[in-house]
Length: 319
Image (cartoon, rainbow, N blue to C red; front, side, top):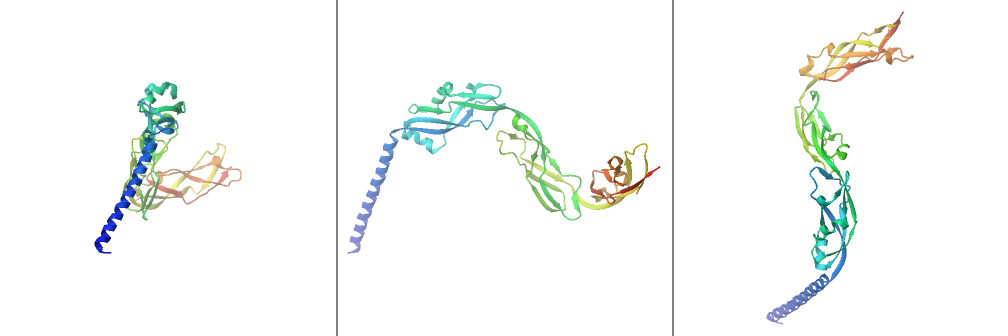
């Protein structure tokens, strides 16, 4: 067979295959159109779209948000409900309202539902026939922000005072019943390591995602801290024994105790024995005790980790 004859045969064969495929596609299209031109009765779940809700009202999310509507229509009209989740508008301006709920009743609202469908789409049934929408009134609450952190300093460094949050609280707008359950907002965890200089970091808030009705004045805060060199000091502080009964006299030893404290170099010289108050409470004694327990009851704000190196105060009763 010559090359020209082979090419003619191949062309003829390809055309036959293409015609065959064309007939298959046409047959499929004709079959689909035939089915879509028939009438069907189907039930679809419609997402409820609340409209004309007063600005000061919030519909609580646990209310019913879907409505099952059974429709009779030609297939080509119903196909759109399969392609995309259908929605139905519920006009809250027309609903009955009491102190806690809006009430949607199908018999009363059927005309508003019918308006949202094509004239060739017949509504057969609506389930449920009554929907109760629980609502609450919007309110504003100022809620403190709590830092969640894991901040590690290089040896000999620490934050002077405490880390500050700007802002340290945020306004939350939402239903009062929801806001009453929230007492604080935590930040996402701030991880810092080997810190030797001042901290200024932005950190996101861990906002409650389960409450979509809430609005927040801030979604992040600034964490600020002054970092300095720190050193350890030790100082003798007098011990005060309190609550000694009037009919009892005691002698105790030692009269002073060493207080070990940790503070910044810039504040070190301002620390004196009068910066601390150490007390032992006589009322805390039991019959078997032969010594008093000293405690630090006051210390400067600039001091960290103050502790006593002596844990007991010996005493004797004086006749």
